[in-house]
Length: 488
Image (tube, rainbow, N blue to C red; front, side, top):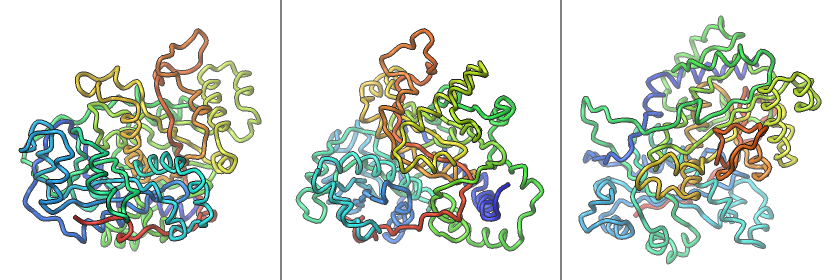
C-alpha cells in the first residue's frame, strides 16, 4: 500500500503534468531542420530563472559542475561564430541558427567544481582527492555537467523558451580560448555544448518529421523475474498519456483543496514534479523505497518520452535496461532461478545479480529496497545504424555525451508519470557491462546476453519507486547565479 505522502505526490503529478504539459515539454524533436526565431527579446531575469530551476537536478555528491555563459551582444556572438565552421554569412554549417537566435548559451563544465564544496553543503576536505589528483576531476565534471545540461534544456522548455542545441561543428578549444582561459574567474570552465535560445517561429500547419529513435523492443530490454511476469508485463504494452492509478488508489478522490492549489500554481507545481524544487509535498530524492510498488510502471511510456530529448544524431543513442527486483525471500537469485528452468527468469536474475555485484558498498542497501532499477547506457554501435555524415561523427565520446543529455528526459518522464527516482553513479562500469554484449563481439553459443544490447555502455543507474519520505536526505544548497552564470 502506498503511504499518504506517496499518494499525495502521485496525485500532484497527475494534476500538474497533464497531457498538454507532457506534449509541450516532451515535444518530439526534429533533426536537421533549421530554426528561425521571432524578434521577441528574452529577459535577463528569465535566463537567470532557467538556471535557478535547472540547478536543482541531481549530481554526484552535489558537485553541480554546470556553468553557463549567455552570449547576447553582437560582439560576443561574432566572437563565438568564429569558433564554428561556416562561411562569413553563417551558412553551410547551421551557424545561421546561432547568429539569428536572441541568445546563445555556452554550457560548460567546471574542472574546479570541488572548490565550491563548502557552499554546496559538502565538507571542504572532500575536495582533497582532486587537489592530490587533478586529472580525476574531469570525468566527474564531464558526466555530471552533461547530465545537468539536459536539465538546463528541460528547464528552458518548462519556462516557455525554445532551445536548439547546435548540431554543426565547432572548436571547443577555440571557444575556451576565446571565452574562458584568459579570465581568472572562469579559467577552469570547459565548453561542452552550444545552445540557441529564444522564441521560435512556428508556422501553422507545419508537421516536420520527428527525430528517429529505436522502438521500445529494440532500444530497451526488461529483466523481470517477479511472480506472474507475463501478466505484469502485458500491462506495459499500451502507454498512456496520464499514468494509470495503482490498484490501492483507484477509488481515491482528489481533495478539492489540492486541485485548486495545483491549478492556481501550475508552473510551480510542474517545476516541483520535474525538478524537486521544494520539500513541501514532493520532498527530495528518496534513499529508500516502499516495498510495494502498486501497479507496474509504464516502462514503454518512460522510454518513449526519454527518447524525445534533442539528440545531435539522426537516431538517439540512449538505451535502457529495466531490472525489476526479485522476490525478497530469494537468498540467491541466480541459483533459485536455475531450479525453475525458466530461461527468461534465469537471465533476469543474472542481470540483477551482476548489477548488485557492481555497486559500491554504500549503495547496496538502498538499491535492494528499490522495486525497479533502470540501467542507462550509450549505444556505441550507433554508427552501424546511421548513414552519411552522422555515421562519421559518431565516435564513442560524442555518443556517450549525447546519451547523457537524455538522462534529464528520462528522469523527468519518470517523475511526470508520478514516480520517485534516485540516480546513482556509484558502481563499477566494467562489472555492470558484463550484462551487455561488447560492441565488436558476437554472442557465443549458450551466451545468455541479449543480442540487442551489443555495444551498450552503461553510465548511470536510476532507482525507481515510491519514495519513503521518512528516510530522506536533507536537500543540499546549490550555487547562486553570480557564481555559475554570466552574461556577455
